[in-house]
Image (cartoon, rainbow, N blue to C red; front, side, top):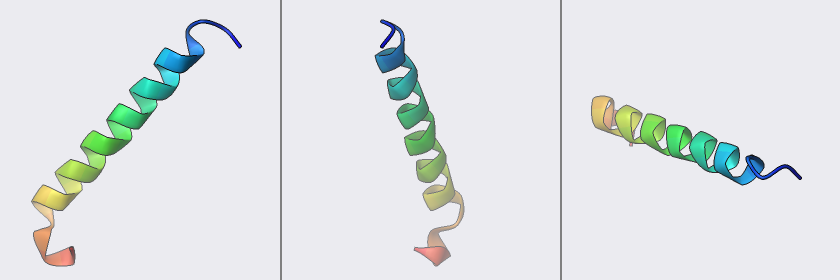
Length: 31
């Protein structure tokens, strides 16, 4: 496993979390 793999996974998880947060804020009626 390359040294940058953990950082890449963390970045992807952060982007997914931010995306979910944006959806929750923009579409509150669906939650």
